Amino acid sequence: MGALNLLPLVVLFAVVGGVGWVCYQVFLYSNELAERGVKKMEKKNVLFTKDGAKVGVKEVSAEAYADKTQRAFVKTWNAAQDGSPASSTRSRTK
Image 1 (cartoon, rainbow, N blue to C red):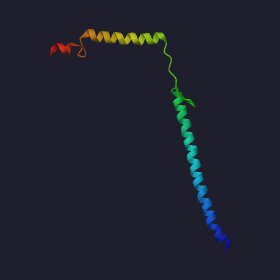
Image 2: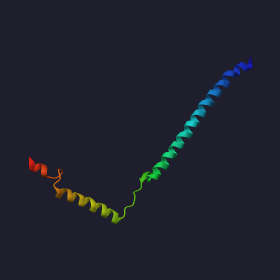
Image 3: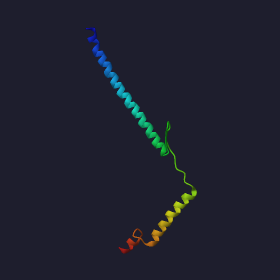
Image 4: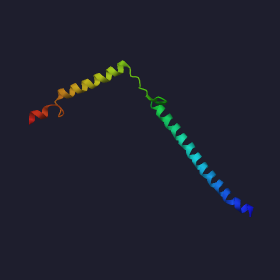
């Protein structure tokens, strides 16, 4: 008769232990997922610190910046001189 009185207590401990194990597995998985996310963001030059997020900027040399700017200016200038439909020729035909 004494062993039957302990059966509900054993079942209770088994259920609590099972729920605790499931919660622990969820905790481990969430930490692993967070670490993967941090590593992925570090590849994109985003660092998370206690103060917040810091974003790194890729360095662009002055020469490369000047080349890109000049190229864009020349394309715009040429498009304006060609009289393409994007220029002011539409307003003259109306």
